[in-house]
Amino acid sequence: MTVGGRPRRLVLVDPCLQGLGSHPYHYAAAVRAAARRAGCDVLLVTHRDFTAAPADWAVLPVCTHTAYSKYTLCGGLDRLDDRGRGPWLPAMPWAVAHARRRRDERIAAFAQDVLPALAGLAAGDAVLVATASELEAIGLARALAAARPPQGVGWHVQFHFPIFRGFAADIPRQEPRLAAARRVLEEAARAAAPHAITYHATTAELAAEYERLMPAPVGVLPYPVQVPPPATRPTHGPLRIACLGDARPEKHSECLAEVVRQIAADPAVAGRVRFAVQTNRGYPATSRKPEHVAVTRSLTALARAAAAGAPVELLAGPLDAAAYARELGAADVLLLPYDQGRYRSRCSGVVLESLAAGAVPIMTGGGWMARQIAAAIEAHAAAVMARSRVLATRRFERPRIGRQPLTLELAAVAPLAGGAAAVAVEVAWEGTGHVRLALPPVRVAVTGGPAGPATVLAAGAAAGVSTAIMPLTAGPGLRLEILPACGADAAAPSAITVRELATDAPVPASAVGLVIAAPADAPAAIREVVRHADHYRATAAAHAATVGRTAAADEIVRRLLP
Image 1 (spheres, rainbow, N blue to C red):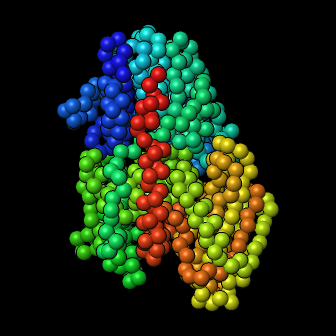
Image 2 (spheres, rainbow, N blue to C red):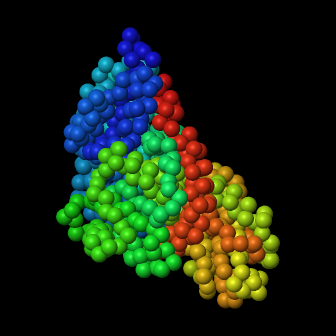
Image 3 (cartoon, rainbow, N blue to C red):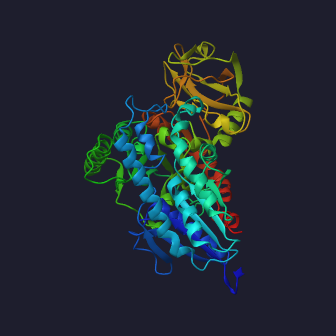
């Protein structure tokens, strides 16, 4: 692949690429390797702190700022509550002016920083700005207006961060936040003409958000994974449960010490699992923010527990690519109890990499993360229902679920006291396409007796139902409770169908992995995986090939090149 007698060039710009072991680093490594396989030269434009690149990488470390900033639309979400409502008092005029100056400075700096990388480009080359916010999109457009490169170059920006809080009903009140950014983006796009930028997001959920902002359509460019093929893991010995990536509040890292404590104290699973926790913090060590202090305390408690002989290994990070791949390959289970207020529309590289590696994910539901295994869960639920005897069926048309749960006595399974049983909950949703992705999900739990973890059911983009299988030990007093999930005040599915089932033997709750409602459900999910370890391992391994195909870096490079 040549242009003008030289190989085609891919310029990958990532202002968040600051060091080894980060996901921007793994992203760059995957895309660079794929571009090299396609015969392209690759130039990486990174943050100026990135000074430890492999010797054979062509790197221009010039970016003054990262895309992480309180002056971006995503950064502004910290000032909103879970439903997108801002503070009662408006910002002072001087504060508004200060924020505008800071945004302008960042845009100007990015435009100036990337200019050297645009020199010498030719038709057939491509530029991708990854891990971007709206400020980098504006900066690239201004750099184009200044550089006036030749036509025929592919220009791409990939957004990585959410710009809304809450659900579909909460978005209209947040639209005014977008007005100024939308106006500047439109002006920048006109200035860059005749060049046009193609906009991408890492998920369909995120693309739907940015289409409300951008002056052009926003597509989905998958996040690439670069891990070895699924490992052949030992079928004996304790399950290795890994928590990889930086420890941060939005990953609920403050809960890890309590999860380890509960599992270590449970005689039913003690000795059958072992934890591996990456301990580098994704925030300044000196931070006194309460959420950061809570994570630090949890890591300190884990260190004490490890010293006292608890089944936990502490992994000093950040991990380089080889060490990270080894940990993925060694893990039987990935514990991912992320805050869905932050991750509902956002891609997680750890999720994709764990799935591609054939590990079993335990992750919070309500958004993009859980949708990665939704099809496998639906297939499993259909198989369980097909081989079970239906004892009772109840259907609720257009239920309005609010602060008071929809509660059902599971009376039909009571006579089977001590026997194997389950309840199947099927939720149907209204709307089409991306609208469905922003509908409030529901939390489903069985109370009053031995049961598995609470789970979350959410709508997918395609028409259809979402189903949960809740295994239980039959007996009196069992109740099913359905509540709004992920901070929603209410949920309004089009229908809910509940089936009480008699099963020949205890059935797994899920396939590939487990979707939980909150970090507090993680211990019950771990017990579920231990009980049905062979089933979860086999279904996760079968699912791995699917992820490897859809998140292949080679396909991403093919889409980037003109």
